[in-house]
Length: 479
Ligand code: HEM
Ligand code: HEM
Ligand SMILES: [Fe+2]
Image (cartoon, rainbow, N blue to C red; front, side, top):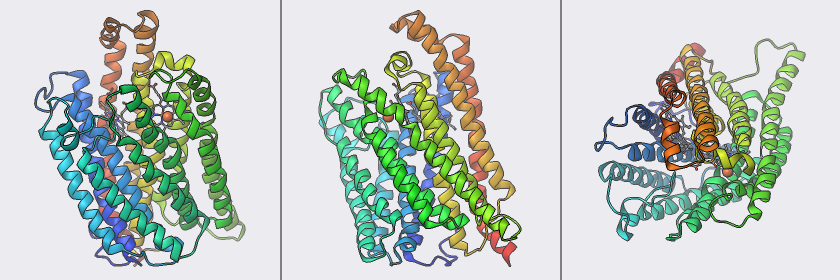
């Protein structure tokens, strides 16, 4: 991955820029995991790094790095496919590169400030300079404005290239969806000192990202990747894509009501949230079926023609995309559905059950396919016809997936115990909260989460090792 750009098999400048974004993404992913490990140890030994690196900071950097690396990888993937899909050179890639450096410098400064300034009062100045105190998207206002400028440059590149080039179905969805995705960020920038109103708008970003626009984005990536990796027919993947878009927006937009149960919004949100969010797993099933169907179909056609071997041109990328199909359905669809009805959510709200869902969904729906796109980028960079799965690729995907699944199960058990003891038995008092946290079921579950976190991290090391070496190995094998 380090030499991917120098290799010079990339057919256009946009792809170079895509690889630049991928590299930063993977570094931030590593930082995310290290922060998670620190926070996980602090659950078990609360004095660990106390007043040196507090839980609040570790947790904040953990989930902000998560969002930022995913956005980096999403921008990278878009640049990767832009010229391919439109048949036109990216219009202002030089400007895009400038944007990349500005964004990366800003992200570095923001993270350093998070780490250096850990405590203090929230004031108008801290809002501008330190952070905004909005979970997942804490960037201080100066950085917010910078982010908007850089994203405008990115969007200009995508939109103008699209207008000049061919307008495929995939690109049409991409261009419209990115406008919504980027525009929603602005909803998280308004400041109000009414906490209900603040949460109301904050969910427009978080929920409408992960359950509407990010999901549609993943749909476009999967469509593009299936065409490239297994030679799926464009008409078929684009037909699926339109159906998915319709269903995702149809359920996801009003599904936002499942966050409006207890924050002071009107009670009609109970019914709206329950109904529409309960429908959200349906498109996820469709996406799952679609990937497996196309794969089976292309393989069948190849066999029918008497070809030997499989149709997959990039083993690790396809493995991650199939994991995405499962992970999205399980993490978002199943684990999301578990707690989405208000009758259930009244007990599970804000327990470790939520964290279980948060881990499996972000990993299953997004980390997986974005890593798949990185492998695809590598294949292009090194100009190889086929990229085969290595031992390291297998260890990378197996250990990270097994680790995240393990953490999810441990957290689900912890959440279950909280529901029974803290909420059911003891009526959700302050005292109940601490009693539930000190029972063996909870403590053991947190221990298992930490162990499974280490497994995830070992998997990550294999993944990086593979990303750094697989390109050269594939070139050698081909020669
Ligand atoms: C890939 C898609 C998804 C991702 C990445 C995701 C992620 C998350 C995260 C991180 C939270 C915790 C937010 C917080 O800090 O308060 C959350 C909450 C929630 N999610 Fe999802 N989610 C996804 C899809 C879904 C779906 C499809 C459903 C329902 C079918 C769902 C139902 C819920 C509910 C009900 C909550 C609130 C939990 C509570 O009351 O504590 N999610 N989600
Ligand atoms: C080394 C592995 C990891 C460890 C040890 C770890 C640990 C943690 C800890 C301790 C928290 C704070 C939970 C709380 O406040 O109760 C957390 C939150 C979170 N982590 Fe991780 N994590 C890891 C990997 C990941 C991965 C791979 C993802 C997703 C791709 C992820 C996504 C999240 C999310 C979305 C939250 C917020 C959940 C919520 O508040 O509901 N983490 N993690
Ligand atoms: Fe949601």
